[in-house]
Length: 168
Image 1 (cartoon, rainbow, N blue to C red):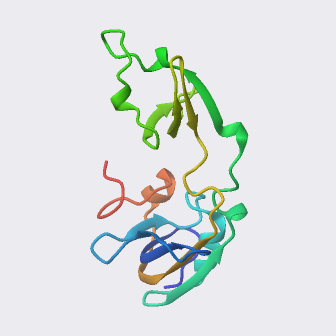
Image 2: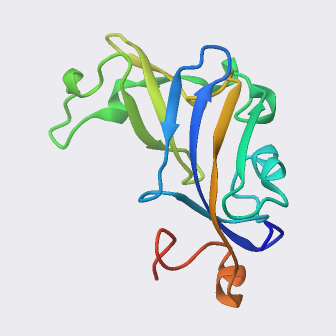
C-alpha cells in the first residue's frame, strides 16, 4: 500500500542538521515514528516527501529552515519577572533556572511551550521561546516500515490508535 491521505505510516529515520551533519534525533524499528498521514500534524514538506512511498522504501531529503520550524524571531524572546517563578514559599530558587535550561511554560491561552533560559538577573529571567530547531536546515534519511489504512475512529480523532500510537 502506498502512503496517501489517511494512511497510518510507521517509519524509522535519522534527522541531522543539513549544514553540519550533526545528528539531532533518531528512531528505530522498536521505537518508530507512527503517524496519521495528511492531517497536518507534521511539517508539510516532510509529508510531501513521503507521499506515494511504500513499506521498505527508503528516503533521503532536506528541508530548509523556512519550511520546517522557521527562522528565529526576536518576537519570541521574553523578559519575565522572577515573581512568576516563585515557589510555594514565595521564593525564587535560582538553581532551578540555570542559563541554557529548557523550562516548560504555558501562555495566556493555555498553550504549552518551552522557553530556554538566556539570562537571570535580580528582577527578571530572559527566555527564548523560538522552537529549538528554528533556523536549522533539516536532513532526513530513513525507511518506511509499514503503511496501512487508518480506521474510521483514527480518522475521526485525527491520530493513530494502538501500538506506538495514542491509547484511549
